[in-house]
Image (cartoon, rainbow, N blue to C red):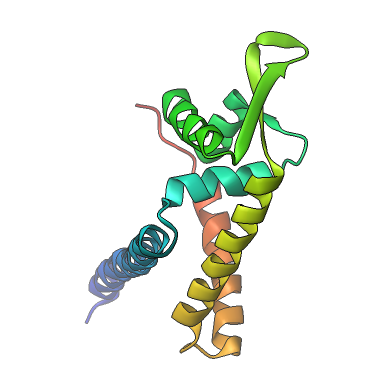
Length: 162
């Protein structure tokens, strides 16, 4: 094979490998997420989005504004508001006006919410551990490093103007 044909062939193989790796990552992520969703509903009658809101609130013990919560979770204000209202009605969260801006609310977990989240987080960690149990520790460590490299590569790819 000539040099030019070899380069074209190698480039096509690399492109197919890139897409195959991306599809494998997507497949693994989708399977894990579906299992987590099913288990939260079946065992705790809750949802993954509620867990995500509670996890964010757990990281902010003094509370966080609804806007910050929305930005952190990458969801609309309306979606966050609905989830927070559900958590409030269950006694897991409380909101209060922000001192510097009365139009804004600060949301925090209640003691009951922290206790419930701790239970959910323990289950979440156990489920993830079980799903990864068939993978040797050295492979997980290597994969973690490789994914960090991939994340840096993705971050370096500037978005093209539309």
